[in-house]
Amino acid sequence: MSSRRHLCLVSILVPLLAACAGTPAVPPRIERISAEQLEARLPQPGAGLPLEQVVQLARQGVAADELIAHIKSSASRYRLSAGQIVDLANQGVPLAVLDHMVAAERQRIFDDMAADANKRDLACHERIDRELRICRNQMSGPMYMYGPYPMINCFPPAPGWPYRPYCY
Image (cartoon, rainbow, N blue to C red; front, side, top):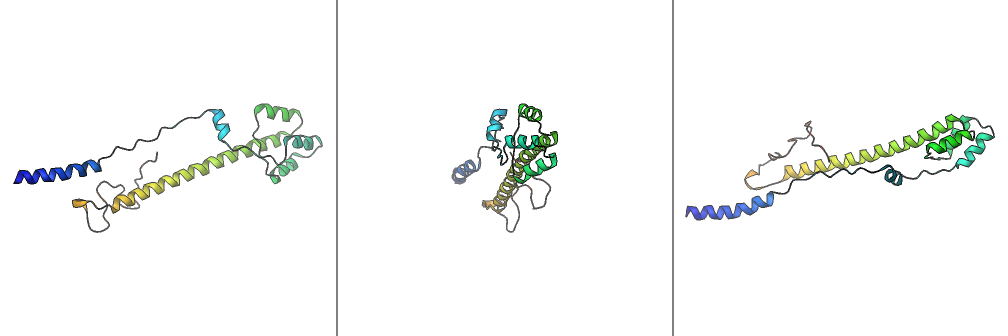
């Protein structure tokens, strides 16, 4: 009788344990992109004030500060290559204006990258918090404990603990 009971218990526990055992999560592979692919993914700058007009204003003797103010007010963005910078400098565009054009575009790219990183970080932390809530709220047979006690395999065991797993 005892062996039949053990056999019955084993036949019930094996499928349950098999259902609990899953494949471990594999972190995604980071794919590197080339400079051309990065250029294609970046949003194209919009120039409310074309480069030809900047050159004309510079040739008319407009001060660098006024040119920069005009570029800012038109919300123009320029992604200049080294050759374009040299050509604009040879056509009389002040270096301060060229520095502003390059720095403004670089700052815009960095701001966009930071916003994207913050959005991914927030999504990662929300996923971790959701998984922890699910883990803490699970009720499974003999491990069920009354009250807000976390299960043994849930980390951190309580909100506010310094442990936070890495996000992939």
